[in-house]
Amino acid sequence: GRGIEAAATGTLTLSGTATVASYQAALESVTYDDVLHNTTTANRKISFTAADGLNTSISLTQTISPQVDLPTQLIVSIQPPASVTAGAPFGFTVFAEDAVGNLIGDPSGITVALASNPGGSTLGGTITVSNTGGVAVFSGLTLNLVGSGYTLQVTSGSLTAATTSAISVAPGAATQLLVTRQPPSTVTSGIGFGLTVTAEDAEGNVATGFAGSVTAALAANPGGSTLGGTATVSATSGM
Image (cartoon, rainbow, N blue to C red; front, side, top):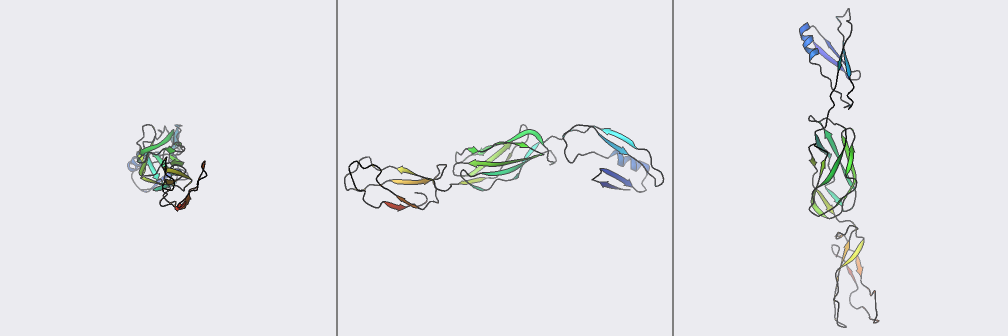
């Protein structure tokens, strides 16, 4: 015999000229799987009807008590970007699955944390999100310090944790100047001296992409001095 399943109605039809014993064995092997993963434990009913082409039997109904699928593992389904800008938002997606790979919703949240932190960064943003239908979407996360090889780990109770692929953090655009090497506290009139200025992004990283002009001028001039020398220089790699 052969079997035809109508997924829309949940009807399985067996037909052919097999023996009664074969049909009995086939019916005894029928299993129930709620592909929508409805987490309710309400009883379901399965009805059996036999027909020989002329007559149709009365229906035999069997009540079954389904067991709720539980997630066992977390999978990073969409990885975060391989490279992000310091302080700029990014995200990734996590699946909660059972042992055979089905998506399973769960009221417990899923939490992300830094697994490797080569640059000493802080993970910003919403670090715990809900598991809806087996899917947790993280967005608006940030890393603030430059470095290569950051990874993130997601956890939820006793579920097997998952770790993301590596992330590199690059500096953002320059937003501020910092005197990183101060001039001498005492100089001789007419003798040259210097200082070093560094351009930084909003997170305090050296803005290595900055190549603009930096100009020095007297801020306080109690003796009425004139600042000599080259007062405007071009930055190289942010310095």
